[in-house]
Image 1 (cartoon, helix red, strand yellow):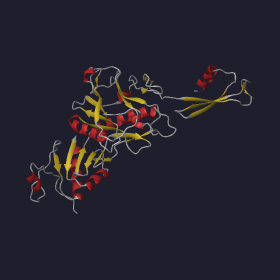
Image 2 (cartoon, rainbow, N blue to C red; image 1 turned 90 degrees about the horizontal axis):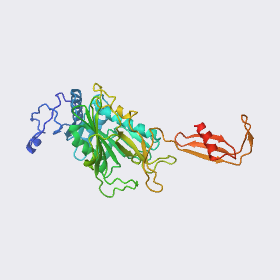
Image 3 (cartoon, one colour; image 1 turned 60 degrees about the horizontal axis):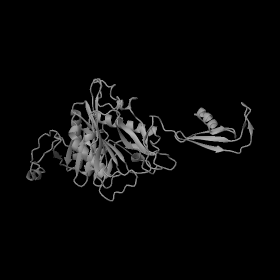
Image 4 (tube, rainbow, N blue to C red; image 1 turned 90 degrees about the vertical axis):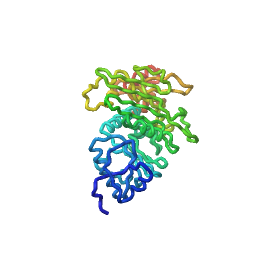
Length: 409
């Protein structure tokens, strides 16, 4: 079958009669101008349809068009063929396909979309790695195609427990003009009956290129006990919002609580957005993996963005979130005998040491001190998996054992 020689064109019918006549060969098609608020109809056989969509998308990407484009009457094979295409012009496209209605939604992002998604993903991965959980209790995945019911979609990044096939935390990035679509995506990931998502982080890019907004969507009946059933409908709710506006020399950061707007002030110092570790690892980690269930700080404010100048090439650079002045600690809640006051740890790996004493050994002579050693203590670090043996005296007290333990570290 010959490929179409005419430029890609579509018709947008304004009435059912025009829709019926659109399939006629005598219908005159005009060249399409990108209108993100209207749904365009694609006609033709599957090979011609794929080639026409690909040519149009390449043209729109080269023109710098961004946002969402809806295409109707798209065959399922065309969707899979478009997803399998690896040309450099279309590899950054994110698609959503509705199998029952044969509708395709394409998002054509700028480079800043991918940059923000990657930087936010690296930031969260660093937090999980410092806790010893990345690729041990949870695994990341950037832009997988996930099918829920009759809809296939792609988040900009997601995480899930290592012992589960489902994902539990996702990221969606888009323009502020597409806020309706972003909210729809967040609700889709959380509210769908077949979904295992618990949290969706939405990032909106402003038109003035000096403002970004991060929103955290969670399950409305999110249970801290970990016993979560989808026997009834679960709704998504926006629980945290932070807006960062670049000013020189200092930016303006606004943390808001959508549930209690009256409690939000224009600028809150040392405010933060926290995500529960259990959302990444589940409450049933793999055997042998030690998890301190609490929160990781995703976004915090303590002089961040102060080192970013207006002439920065990337106006939405998330590097300042890794500023050493930012409060990037992990909150651990120890609830063995009830919920205690949260403890804010420093931004370093959390090491847990165990000491195992082996008494009753035969007396031996040390070549250095010529002292007699009877018991031996084995020091194990659960974070680094390091094992050390330390001889001691049977007459040593607890304080005597502590000194050589810290010398080993």
